[in-house]
Image (tube, rainbow, N blue to C red; front, side):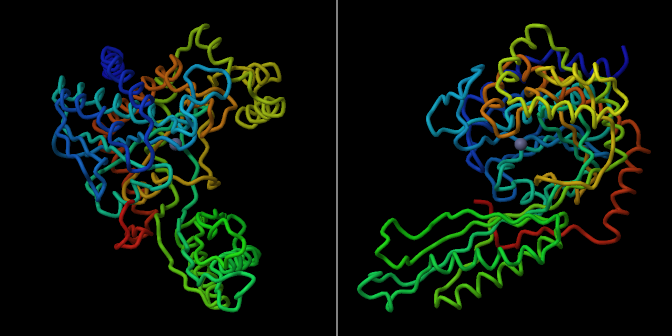
Length: 476
Ligand SMILES: [Zn+2]
């Protein structure tokens, strides 16, 4: 048996504890930093497996690091476990049907993400123990990926600074190495304060915070013409004053997301948006408080590690789905519109330009994708992730594994419904195998780690990572 075969066998032997933990986390969906019950599923397993667990990091009680082994290299694996609001959904149900009306749900598969990473850490640890392999493996419990950005605070506070390489993954509806960038984002509240007055009897005595918020939005609409094309700015009204139209609204709060391909670009737009907010306050004789919530950097994949990881994804990333699994997932595929089904063909064509029409049709019709996207590094970016900050501190690689129904998007009821199925469980185990075998390569090939670090140093160009989150801002 090769070392990698042994590692995958270890994960198979211990699979029930990972699956049980994934189901437990699914059953108690918690959001942002308030993931007390979710994180508690990791501790007994890690302690039983001989990891040293440090609970509470970077001002977050639900962040942790579990360590096994000693010396170099130090390989980190990232785990997430937060859910999303308003995505409660009955398991295995082929239609939108909340378990708890308005409740939380695992619509991004982080119950699988966290436990797949756990399986990876336990798998490589057990191999290290059996064969007295040198080096250190660390599993990081990272809260609030969905908007608070736990990893960005952890990166700012030096939690990842001793790592040589970091690895992660995400459940998806495609199989692919994560070879593209992501957008940097700044998340900021703008609180306007004015003076209440009767809107008809004494309007001259009132100063409208709501007017200020509206004028700020108008200012930002005009700014759009003078931003780089790739920037994205969106907002939500968190407070629009009150429900009485006959009151000059004394308070209003806007929540802004400011995104751009690079942190410096997002910073520049953020500063201009601040000026607009101040201008709106000046025009309306109100006050504005600029309240920085969180930020994360753009993701930069480390090509050396991603290329190695891709080989392991090819070898160990298959879910080995049965006919019954396919029949199960068909219920979600059936919810797709004709347009979405058609778009799956275009996607397959784009990923596999040499495939025949029949092959494309076949690929696009599968309820769970089984093809592997070719490894192709690009600078295109759409969403944001706090793995971005990790990638600026240490060489980082991640991948996406198709254990969600093909064609269904992240943050959907379909993902929440699929979250404790056999398909999802097989995703947890396959992800663990890819992570553990890649960690094995990193522990046994010093030249790979050296190459990864050289590439990372080149990317930084002599500069040091500086967090976009000001020092006085704490996770909340
Ligand atoms: Zn996610």
